[in-house]
Amino acid sequence: LSCDPAQPPANTPVAAIVVAAGKGLRAGGTVPKQFALWHGKPLVRHSVESLISAGIAPIVVAIPQGWETVAAAALQELPGIVFVHGGATRRESVALALEALAEDAPAHVLIHDAARPILPRAVIEGLVAALETAPGAIPVLPVVDSVVRGSDGLRRAAVERDGLYRVQTPQAFDYAAILAAHRGWTGGAEAGDDAQVAEAAGLPVTLVPGDEALRKVTFASDLETAAMPVSTFPRTG
Ligand code: CTP
Ligand code: MG
Image (cartoon, rainbow, N blue to C red):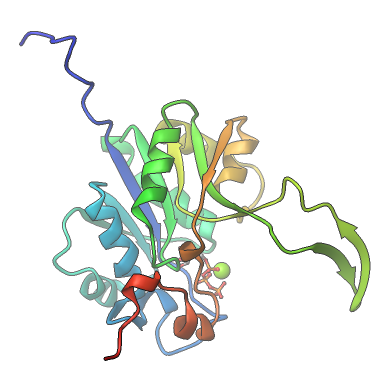
C-alpha cells in the first residue's frame, strides 16, 4: 500500500455511550422514563437513532438490571448496539460502559443521557470537531435569565450571570483520557457530570454551542412538553 499525502486521514472512530440505567423516580410511571413511549418510540430510541445516523458506532447502552427484554425491544433492529448493566449512580453507569469499550478502544467517545431524546446533528459535529484540539468538549447554552441565590424562600443575593452556562449532553472526550479519569476519580459515587470527572483529572474541556432541543426529560410533564423542533411538530390540516 502506498501512502498518498493528498489523501485526508481516515475518519477517527467515534463511539458513544447512552446512559439509560436510571430509575426515573421523578418522572414516575410504570416503566423508567427512558423506555416510555414518546412521539411513537421509546424515549431512548430517539437519540440512539440520531447517533447511528451520524455514523457513530458502537453505541454502548447502560440499562438497569431486570430491564433487558424491554431495552432490547426498545432498540430492536438497530445496528451496533452493545448493552451493559449500569450502576447505582449515573457516574457509575458511565464508568461501566467505558470499561465495556476498553478491549476495542475507540479514539473518541460521546457520553449521552437517554433522557435527552432530541440530539441535533450539528451538536454532534461541533463536539467531534472540537476534539481535534482538546481532550474534552461539552455543549452549553448561556444563562439568559437573571440568577439569584436564595434560601428559606428569600432572595439573598444576585449572581453575576456573565460567564454562566447550562450544561447538556452529549459530552465528548478522548476515550483513553476519560477512561483514565473515571478510573482515577476519588470524588465519590456520583459526579455532577463527566466534564467534572475530566476536570478532576486535569483535562481541558472546550465549550461548544448546545441546543434548546437537547433538554432533558426529568418530570412526567416533560414527556408531554419536551420541545420538538418546529418542523417536526405534527401538523393539522
Ligand atoms: N442514569 C443511569 N444510571 C443511574 C442513574 C441515571 O444511567 N444509576 C441515567 C438516566 O437513565 C438518564 C441520565 O442518567 O438517562 C440522567 O439522569 P436522570 O435524569 O437523573 O434520570 P434518573 O436518575 O433515571 O431519574 P431520577 O433522578 O428522577 O430518578
Ligand atoms: Mg437521577
